[in-house]
Length: 553
Image (cartoon, rainbow, N blue to C red; front, side, top):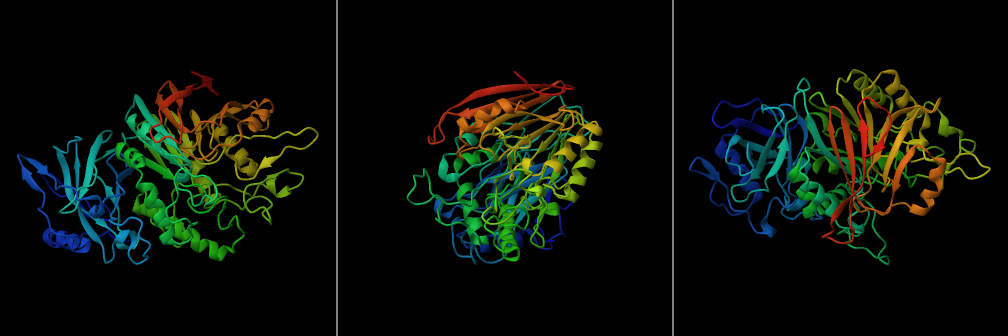
């Protein structure tokens, strides 16, 4: 495993343990020299101490700025977190040998962590490694900090400083936590709107943000159709360079940067990070698996390069990459974040012309109800079941991507029509999960979902007797166009498990939780076509601890 950083040091005090990897034998002067040489830019004054505080270097002009993609933090633990940035002075470079306009070897950066947003009370100061193998991205695992509090951080070369970001350590699992605030988002198509929803969520200063998939879109709007913004390269990415540049264009957005600066993130992917409606090794365009897996490996690596992921767990290997994980915040809430793409069985009745999502009935497609099929894969299912059964958290949140509640299009005189892309396409796997939640006595289970481009509040019911087992909230998209409201609304009388539906609004979801209740707010922006859009609360819901189902707040 490659080094991600040189151990950070307390100020003053002994060095903390290495984040990962072996200890560097470079001197500080040699390390800084390496970083500056690799950046190949004029040497400016090094940061200096003045009055007990670090005086940062002045940021360079935009064309020379090594930090145009901003900063991010993620994967909070009680003693630390992951810090991310990527050096990219030419962020949309199409040269595969110089991603971000940089070539050559690894680059070492200054990094500082403070207890205050003005960076006066520095508690860690050291070096971080931007790895050439991963487009000069940094994934610095920090440990040795105090639990349950915010920290502020920045990266620096000897000539430029990154934006200052806010990270948080999690409270220890034994700690009684009174209150927690988080938001979740999904589906941000750059070509279909502006990211003002991110800006409004950042202004709420949540303790955590969940990114539930479709962080980028690989699709390209046809040139003869209207588009608010265009993907810079005008083509669907299939190579590492293409995916890198798509992420870089999204990361240049100031509203997205503001959200990552404001709060730590937990991130999972859905399909558009690779290809619309793909499933495991099965491409929706019927490309041979061997070739598609090469494309998928490139997309997964680009995802890693642009997310605050823990390299000791998530480093891409052999064309695959683990992203599912569990994070607890005191004794109050535990998040199980799932991968619903990499391990799923191919979609039911996968054959031309239907390589992706399509509508079938069980009579037409017996494969649909095959109990061997899984949306998560056997290993991830077992991991999820074990974690839920052993959890002592008051609230157990499952973060995943596609609609879990059934949605039946009950056309008169016909069998139920099922959408193969969502959990309706894997009904046996859904039944196993709900049966396990009920039989193992999981406390206050709540499912959070993306993908659907609409707000939903659903009750998840056991098929055998219709008993409510859990609650599902689906967040609408940041920008992506929603499903036709009138058509779906016609189905709702036959779907009593759906308590709320709205597909005409874009936005995000905010959640506040304490020991007694969870309050969820659907936050709608005024117009995704307006970069200065406002925000308002569309609807609020409450779940009382120990009670099944959801009520309007």
